Amino acid sequence: MGDPPAIEAIDLVKEFGEQRAVDGVSFSVPQGTVLGLLGPNGAGKTTTVRMMTTLTVPTSGTARVAGHDVVREPAAVRRSMGLTGQAATVDELLTGRENLRLIGALYGLSATYMRRATEDLLERFSLVEAGNKVVKEYSGGMRRRLDLAVSLVATPPVLFLDEPTTGLDPRSRVELWDVLRELVDGGTTLLLTTQYLEEADQLADRIVVIDQGNVIAEGTPLQLKDSSGAAAVVVTVSHAADLGSAEAVIRSVVPEVHVEPNARQLTAPADGLADMTRIAVAFEGTGIELDDLGLKRPTLDDVFLRLTGHRAEEPEAEIEEAVS
Ligand SMILES: Nc1ncnc2c1ncn2[C@@H]1O[C@H](COP(=O)(O)OP(=O)(O)OP(=O)(O)O)[C@@H](O)[C@H]1O
Ligand SMILES: [Mg+2]
Image (cartoon, rainbow, N blue to C red; front, side):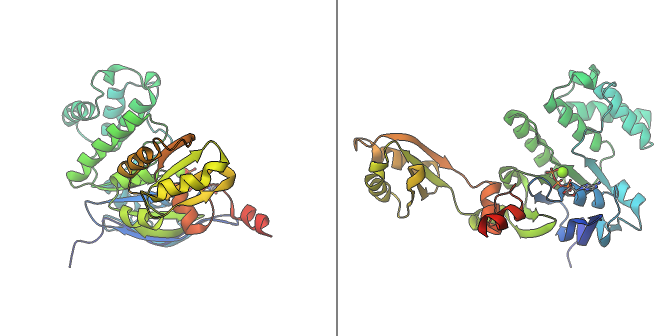
């Protein structure tokens, strides 16, 4: 028998009046691994995280964190976990250093321990210089890093991160990913929510996709990307008359091409940059004028389209209306 899962959700349900925001969600996260909870706006990610972190009580179902039941043993759950929420939890009028020490005091950690821990955390999140600035003056990326540092003060074995990189510029996002990878290497179990397939792909061992409160897919990032189609090279010709000859050019490189005449577009499933380059080279000297040639990687939208038949932000009702 292996270790019990660090995080477990069993048929979690949360109703707000008539609405079932979370409609029977189950998953389990082995210790020292990362689960990505992927879904569009309003899918039920935050509500799920709030139930798992004792901030809201499930309508039905159960969840366990580090073996503790979120309803019956909320205090034990809180001791085992850290949370970085979608809304910032730090005090804007305090400095980064003060925020960290304050949280330490709230956890009952000694001032001596906290002096050391604060400097370690500031170091780890590249906030040493910003440590004496009030948070109000922080950039988005600095705030996100401080949020995360705050959630690590009590060195919890389980960490919940609700959209940790939303609103960050690409560089800050990659930096944060690195910090998270270090944490996981150190044995932390991570549950993170995200709207970005790429982020789940970068960090998660397993991904659970939720839509309208339901789990609609589950698997490794690779399985999920396979199910949503591989990358594709998309070529837009300048003149519709060239669609036929363009199709032949692409077919000389890859076996499959879809033509969308209205968009003057040809889409070819492809392996990546190498195929894109070969296709670009094949167009040289053909005299076919192109508006665009690019690589399209599967996105959350593609996953959704494939799994549910609708785009991530399109409500079900609209689809039905459109069909009838
Ligand atoms: N306190 C509440 N009262 C009523 N409805 C709520 C409440 N919290 C969430 N909801 C509703 O439940 C559904 C799920 O919301 P939730 O915040 O969990 O989604 P989310 O996946 O986190 O979305 P986002 O990506 O926008 O953060 C939404 O339709 C939302 O409007
Ligand atoms: Mg949310």
